[in-house]
Length: 209
Image 1: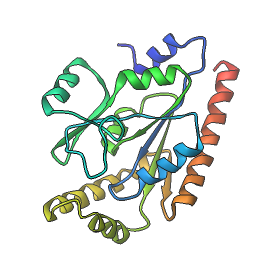
Image 2 (image 1 turned 30 degrees about the vertical axis):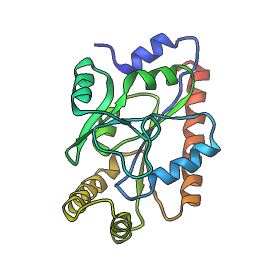
Image 3 (image 1 turned 180 degrees about the vertical axis):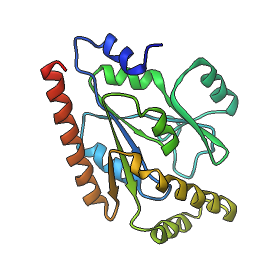
Image 4 (image 1 turned 120 degrees about the horizontal axis):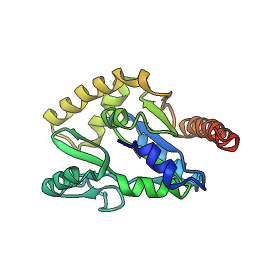
């Protein structure tokens, strides 16, 4: 069976494909804020808008933050093979639409997937890609951020903290790990990583390897 990476290369033999950038972080780490800043700086980046079965939070918009869909529609998409990766988190489903990501990569855009550690593992084989894990300064800081949201019940908050411990245990599987002390410094760190990875990829492409 042909891999997604091989399929991308076949359909894009005359043009350099984009880089897949996988970013994971425990809930409350600040990944959304960091990526908004980075998208404003780097015009070659494209965000992949995920599907989810959960309800939108205050201020979130359909097709912009997520595609908010019914469980039935999500499960039908799974059967069609419509996701690059998908996972069930906190009793809700999240998935990355395959067709959109492959289209943008063929166009030479660098596509960012902000996904959890389980989803990241499913696309680990995809090349070229770089995997970045964003850490909170401490668990205490993370708990304070989550409490400050006032978006979850006590039961939901405990479930999130349990998931945080699991995700933190997966950090060593990533290519890079960054502690998010401040948004400004974290954006600089991510920028350095992408410049390094793009240079490596361009060199391989130019050399024909």
